[in-house]
Image (cartoon, rainbow, N blue to C red; front, side, top):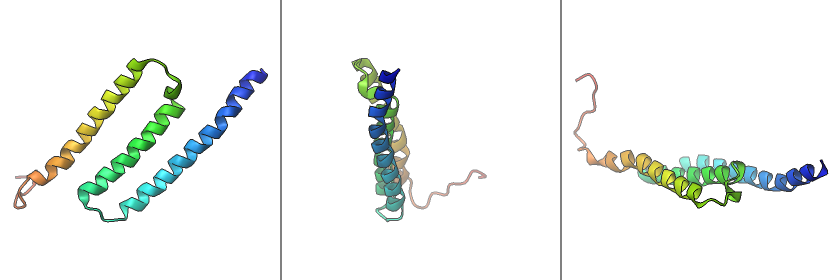
Length: 107
């Protein structure tokens, strides 16, 4: 029973550090949203911060840091790349429309 308590207590410091990093990244996201970097650059910075936060959560709280199987890391990496492509596709193509194009759903 004492061994289980020792296992948990040694991870508490790491959990608190991850919490602090997530808190700081959230404040950083709010601060960067108030700075005008250009529409696309603001989105890219926000996505970079969100990706870092998601990586922290996945590696520490989902215990992927201690996973030894490489197939999990390959699958996770492919999902992350696919997600980034799907998120960036509308951002990249947003400037492809002419300025005079009227976006109306009612015709």
